[in-house]
Image (cartoon, rainbow, N blue to C red):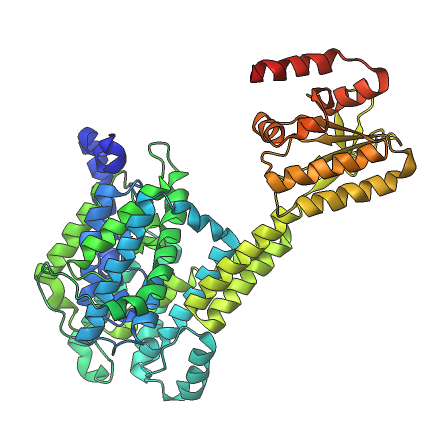
Length: 575
């Protein structure tokens, strides 16, 4: 058993040195400075007391540093998961109540258990059914939903909270005239300050700057801003070990939201991890290990009052840019959170909620990916419409339905594309032995009595009818002159029983019309399936060739040299 694969921290910890520590120290402190105000802000999104955002930044980070395959991904509370938590749990309990908190912690345990099981059984491939256009559409829509939900804190108006944009916008339009002047001024000023410092340098802790300015303003000039809502008391101290309360009825009700968090959390972690992986050569992301790491992070985190956590786009990028080389940076961030929980929470008493809303709004609106939408419109219209459908479904129907629509459409498009692959008639390139697509190479020679065609996909039940129809269409165009069909099978990497039966039926059809059927470039595993399925009962080895030009040459000249070598090679493989 390779312990380094199971516990990735063992890959870098034994060789850890002072040069690595310098980069990790700077990155850990930088991320910690950003994480503390973000944690407080994201807890408010989730409908939890601010302290739970800091709890979420403790144990999950430690667990991921030990078990995660990425050394730079920053784990903790994030805006998207926080909104999903609020959406799901708010239907079961009143936000902020003891029951609400208990259910949220149980949800973290459920999410972690599902992620861990998926990782152990190597089920990470499931996330592949969410294509990049789906992820882009979903992320952009959720960013807008989170942003508009924060207008209640930014403007000081008790707008309705929802994961359906039309409900939020309707309430904002009707009640925006009731905005709180002082709250709005502080909030908008915070937005401007954050954007200003981000333009100068993303490494500047803009969130911390506006937090400090907001606290100073309310502490020393609070009498002028008595109508501005502040965070008030945040308890000091570290979370105690406690088993979540189990209720099987609640588990059933939470399962849809838990599955949504599993998919979204894993997607975020993998996409962030892969982007960071590309910038270095020291480690590689292992998807199933990431699931295990996330699972352990959420399960163990729930025992210390953490709600569901995953990786953060912004903090991970800053972690990498600040020089993080290993998971030690995350442990340094944890130390900063611990110090805050033990000694510094009273400092946040006067923190205006509108400042937290400003931090969230600027962070999430940056996730609305207009650039990717423009690229998809130019590159692939179908992917663009897939992205747009996911985007609109998430905005209008809610987060859960957005995921369902995205996955459903991805599967439909996958089935559509695999059931209707590219089929091409090939012609001979003059003065060569190559055959190429006649629609792309005008100079190729096409024989009236010979049809050479290529099928660019596996041949199975979903596309066997399409294969037959396209073949019949090409045969019909050739007419009565057709005497030879050569299937260039180089692009066929698998064939199932339905595909084989269809081939056998077409070969028999051709034989009745005195049309010879040859195979060229059949891969070994595909050839094995054909032989096991009895295709040699209809045709013999003389109908198999290494290349299309050899098949045509044999038909025209009777030159058996290449064909006999190939037949001998096949015989040897089966002796």
